[in-house]
Amino acid sequence: MSRRVLLKGLTIVTMNKNNEVIEDGSIAIENGVIQFVCETDAQTQDWQADETYEFTGKIAVPGFINAHTHAAMTLLRGYADDMALMEWLSDKIWPFESHLTPEDVYYGTLLACAEMIRSGTTTFADMYFHMDAAAEATKTSGLRALLSRGLVHTVPGDESAIADAVRFCTQWQGDADGRIMTCLAPHAPYTCPPEFLGKIVSEAKSRGFMIHTHLSETKDEIEQIKRTYGQSPVEYMLSHNVFSCPTLAAHCVHMDDQDMQILSDHGVAVAHNPGSNMKLASGVSSVAKMREKGIVVGLGTDGASSNNNLDMLEEARLCALLQKVTTGDPTVINANDALQMATIEGAKALRIDDKVGSLEPRKQADIVIFGTDSPNMTPEFNPTSNLVYSANAGNIEYVFVAGRLLLDQGKIISFDEQLAIDECRKRSLRLAREAKSN
Image (cartoon, rainbow, N blue to C red):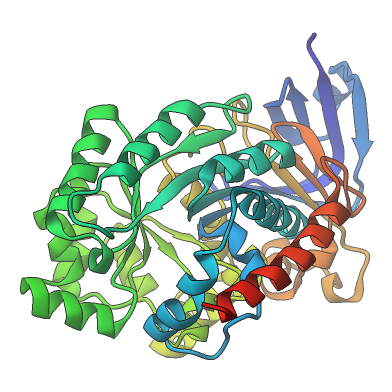
């Protein structure tokens, strides 16, 4: 049965190609798809809705797209802080993760989904393991996601992880009414030697999967790959045909002009993670320069163990401020640029900008509604500036995904949020005890 929903009275920050902002606007939705976005007028009055929301004075934006995270790492939030990346991974994170069960990952992912819904994320790109459990949690939450199993070479000749990743991708692609998408994820150049990487690329090309990977995150990585292969990490991935597949590369902090040109020439999209990069002292990506070269740059939070939150508003603000202070140019990434990166550019990075990322007809109704009746949102000279520089997750009142309401007046209604919190509290304590006993 067809279901029609009308959202009225909004300031609509569309993020369409003209960056149009509509005052006193309406959004009509039918079966989860936007039918029209316009000023509230006779067209609106004539449209027969089954349900109408009066949102006078509120702001509507496209749902944020978290282009890189490890959702179930909510279980490790605060477990290992103030450490360098490789020490952090080898001494703390990997020993902890070795004890994770599928049920742990389910609840860790569900907790992440709650946090993301509350902070306006409607789509996320996740790379982790026990991904069937992560997919079940995503399905339960109502969110949209690009899911992948992180592939790390461990034992020579053992390609069982690749086979399982292909099985996962094939099984889950298009599930949850199309909200779940899948891809292959070679973890990073330093964990994927040539033969292993080549097999992943071969599977991706033959089956039409895109690739999600970490790339050029730290100076140590650059030096290690240079010593081992005589190439930069970008050159290494190029030489093994990774970029012959649609590729989403997380971080890309340390790149020279030649590296950037390679990414641009091959249509590689970048997921910039300013919060995580700052906390791990990895460095600051040259976002402005990448964008000048035509590289699509979205935003990601990384995992909650290296950020330590999943708040895309914070990432948008950090992105803009970091580029200003490092370039000495206050105009370099403006509020609209940052909001583009959190929405439509993220959609382009995930290759789903035909479905989400802006509020316009024929796109999925992934919509976030901000309240403005609060001190930090007053006055209202520029809604885009207020969103990027003033707003916080507490201003978000409603979240829709495919027209389905997930957050209603600040309350998650798609699943039991308290259950996820309670389960993660007890599971994280158990996992910490088990990690210490190694």
